[in-house]
Image (cartoon, rainbow, N blue to C red; front, side):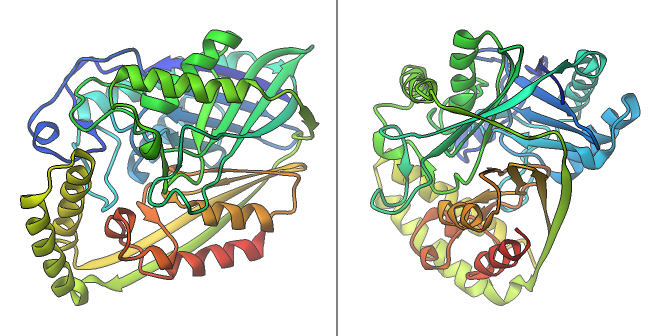
Length: 409
């Protein structure tokens, strides 16, 4: 197996909207101020029967049409097939516009200037990845993260604490790494107006300081996981505290198992969600009226943030007459590792089910990849949490989809 990796600066050179939170500040203002450079991290594997390129971007989400634009540019410049390219958004809520939509599918801003610049930078920045690769072996380490995040809706409910470090070593030297953890990148608050990679990117930077490589970090089943119950603030000081604590737990992994990744079988799972949304309009209107009453009385910052976001989502739902979603998941089957990509945000219990059904020693799930269809949550949480408000997936539909997926694993 040949491995190569690189970090590509995608910091905006033009004003952008920040994606992730809905409020008057974010809606009215644009920014060009970055707290630190943001990146796209590329990892390329050349295997016996195929190749694989994973590209993570420091953005909120990746719309399918924007992912296709990036893939088209890459395939025109390099010898690789579109189906071998996977583009993942780290889900920072302080990321730039141009690629991202919210949970309702509404694009934050069609920022053509930034998007075209980034695609150009990515294509140029990938040159070393395709020009040179090193023979390497794969090693997997696993741990659990505690004390910094949990199920943000109910700390007594299950959350997926698993964290994986997939290392690629050449002559015992670490040359590349993929880290898979389950947490929202939402330490910074909704009034922050500095472009930032937030939690996932800061963990990456902490690992970079220790290991002298840029690891590729991707989020798993994180739809109901965040630092909400452990928050000591929502600024960069709190971001650094949280990231360092999580990084220290990742670095405590001592036992790594060598795994076989020399071949890859790529399967696709497709699922369609389609219904008449106008039948639900009266219910949406009642919810909006109740939210408005609560907003007038609420003073808690976190609760107001959720109410404002819920208000925005119901207003968006009233503009959508027909829901039709073509969902596409990829199953990357290595001999001892299953890597599942998911086009949205998935809750912990479904990640647990997928891992239980998988036949391989290790299973990692990359959500927010190649497309974005919002939240996919368990049916008993409808009417109880924000994620149920911010989804167009009907109650019980995710269970049906994941059960069918499990039959393929």
